[in-house]
Image 1 (cartoon, protein in one colour):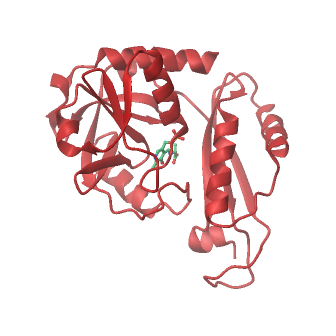
Image 2 (tube, helix red, strand yellow):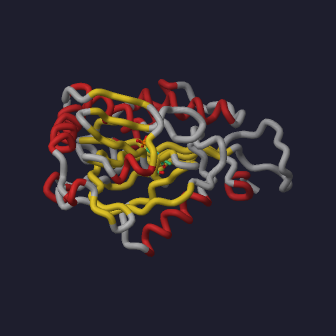
Length: 259
Ligand code: PDD
């Protein structure tokens, strides 16, 4: 009778580990706390306890690249009812091998399609109830593309499983944080790297037209890092060429990982 199973009543994090070191753990734990607070689940552990649990787990696979999947559900109830009372949260943690694509693999460029964003108004919560996202992911599989880029009205929000960036005239544009996107930890790292590479940053609305007329389009997530998109809906972006800004930002991102 776990409410995670019955209702998808839970939240999660995906946290990369490079050479045995958890990358940006505090940022992931802060986002986890926001997700838990949003749906009124008490965090079962302190930051120190999370750190010690993850350290213990990682001892099984020292020095390697991994991705931690961490899920917390509201817990098991006695009957299926929508309303909840305080329960003991269920915690599930799994380690998966993480094999980020190499720069030369990424330089081949990736394809995407654009679809209307029919998700709810709380995309800032990293909820395990991901029906809409898996419908988009399956569409991506059927179209043999890497990602589905989503739009509300004329404005691009994010990808089904990533954040989206448009580069035009030395400026990086990305949707502002808020209820329509998940505030990606990698999104912040991409912004940090872009600043370092002397790009201007504009967290503002991107229109569909602007995506098609971009110099470069990228997506980011903890497992994909920063990935160049060279074709959307069968239309080439910048004649299908990988941009120099992507290359610079990719290099800086790698430096942050290995710092
Ligand atoms: N998803 N937006 C959505 C809808 C996502 O599902 C993700 C990541 C991101 C990027 O967030 P971050 O940079 O913190 O990984 C943005 C993870 C990887 C997943 O569901 O597996």
